[in-house]
Amino acid sequence: MSEELTTDDLPATLLDYDQWVCWQTEERDDKQTKIPIDPTSGRYASTTDSTTWTTFEKARRYAVDTDDIEGLGFVFTDNDPFVGVDLDNCRDDSGSPKWATDIIEQLDAYTEISPSGTGYHLIVTGKLPSGPNRRDDVECYETARYFTVTGNSVHDPPRPVAERTAELAAVHAEYVAGDESKNERDVSKPPQRASMQATVRTSTLDDETIIEKAWAASNGSKFERLWNGSTSGYDSHSEADMALCFMLAFWTGGDVAQMDRLFRQSGLLRGKWDEVHFADGSTYGEKTLERAVARVDEFYEPPAQDAQRTESAKPSTPDPAVAADRKHTPQVQALGSEQHERRLMDIIDRLEARVDELEAENNALRDALDEAREGPQETSEEKQSETPSLWTRVTARFGSGRDD
Image 1 (cartoon, rainbow, N blue to C red):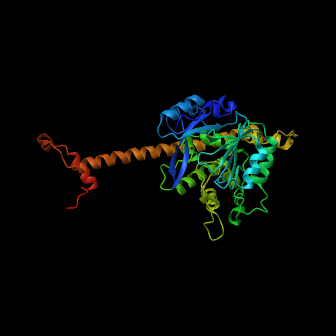
Image 2 (cartoon, rainbow, N blue to C red):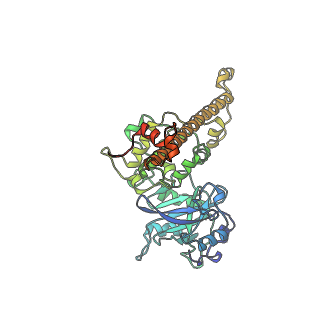
Image 3 (cartoon, rainbow, N blue to C red):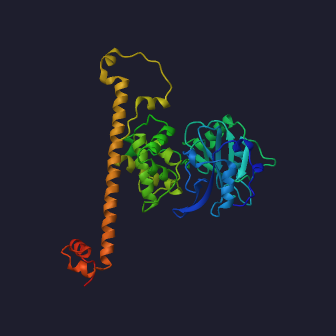
């Protein structure tokens, strides 16, 4: 990255937060994807791990000194007031479509041109309404995501990062949530195929809690890689999609709408997700979610205190009949759920440990076979020994591997 981007190009309020990363492009599924990089370690950064972020100056210095780094990015979290609005495919030599200029004018806040030059990034403060984060070429995020930052402001002088909660609600209602009965292109609509309606489930946990729990689980590193868009370890992008959907199915209790909403926030999302691939009209994403839910045998059952995070406290009068039966008390229910969670985590730990053992055993056997195939390199003393040589022992078990 060149040294062009400086503190003078950016809103001062963003510079007060140590939430900066670098980014570089990598090819994922035949598509160039912007991957966040930790300026301290040079490894992949995570939008939910603050140890992989740093100050603007440190991130800028690393970007300038490192050839592969193409720019800087800012991470949105629950601990800051910022909301990012991403407008894609809406800028070329002929100008911008009306929907894009309407959003820019309505939010009237800091707006810059994206790295590709074909879109805009807007940053405001406020709170997003509940609902989907993305539809068509409009995305809105306030946590667990990052924006590339160019400093190439649309306005001169740049607009401030201003409070726009009311304006965000209006933009979200019109361009993201939309009117599903009138807009056939609404890709945020959750799957509701007839084949799935018989097993509709509803999660009691909000999106943030789901992500936290998945990240903290024993297989959290795998979830992190998939969430950030990595397909390493899988033969195809589709297999990685399914792996993430299995995890989302478990943690959401099979809530397809929440699974769809979360998947759209992950780095694995691509255009194929909303393409019709089946004779019944199902999209690739709908069928992937359906299959994931159908193939998960057990779902996470959250303790009572976790479920209450997404609901307002409601006073209630205890039912004497229930109160008299200890097995129905909230304390015992919570204990049972915690024991169930621990049991599931133990199963996962044992399975992963067994996989590691099998991989180690397989690698050892492969090494032995490779060494044996190089041919016996025995000394005269070894030939006289009563102990069979490595070559003799391996070929006796596996064969020589040669065409005689």
